[in-house]
Amino acid sequence: MRTLVVGAGAVGGYFGGRLAEKGADVTFLVRPRRAAQLQREGLVIRSRHGDALLRVKTVLSDEIRQPFDLVILSVKAYHLPDVRESLGAAVGERTVVLPLLNGIRHMDLLKQWFGPEKVLGGLCFVEATLNKHGHVLQYSPRHELVYGETDGSDSPRVRRIQALLAGANMESRLSTEIMKDMWMKYAFIAGFSGMTCLMRSPLGPILKAPGGKETYLRLLEEIHAVARHHEPSLPEDLAATILAQMESLNESMKSSMLRDMEKGLPVEADHLQGSLLEMAPPGTDLPLLKAVYASLKAYEQTR
Image (cartoon, rainbow, N blue to C red; front, side, top):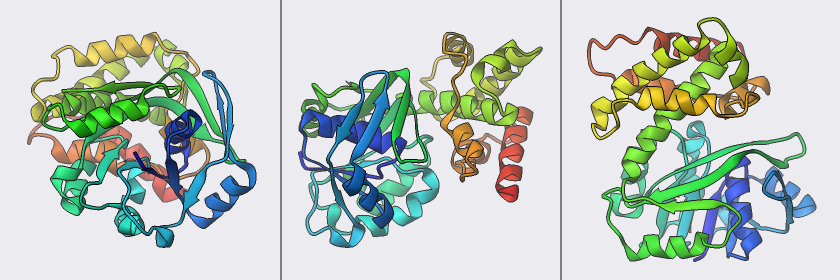
């Protein structure tokens, strides 16, 4: 499959790089500065799963001449308005669009732009960031990409993607419950990013602080109340399960949103916590979620 990875940041650079490392036909859609950097230095991955220095193909938005078979969207949500115009001729009649964004609201937008028949569900689990040199730094044991048809069906195109991902230095999984999986990831990442950014702290000190676990659990319960309203198949004990999972992780873990805050970069407050508040059933009591969102919006105003 001819694959276009939109963005060569932490997520796109990592998973697209692992595909390129395998020998797949991968091109990165990037801006001129990133294209020059990649052409000059290559795509550098520093990871506990193995380092890589890769010579990769890049393209600018005005250089795309024909459709790709697969388009992997790995941009931040606040860059989505630029995506449609940037893709240009990349999306054709048979193109499949696989988003790896956090959250859920982007699905409706992508279906409006490209047609619901072209859009798969997708998500990823990876702790990664770009350093000042543009190198992808990947920290966590988990480096998984999950994808599937939004109706849960088995199709030739997801089987082709399965074959594409097979053998690459990553974990990958074809899901028949991708929308449920996306909501579960949404609950996980909204809580993790919310707590680490509210406390300006990695995971360990939050869980050890007096009242830290209780506060984290209350936030997860609020998020779960909204999520389960839209996806009733979510387990009733999801909040407690996520908290137990957090307790098993490395104490130094930070959310990518906190890493962005530490660099003074934009954050996905509206797409994650803000969208949850907008989607909440009337009368739902969400004081911690509101506090997290207010903290993130205050940060945006003082950047």
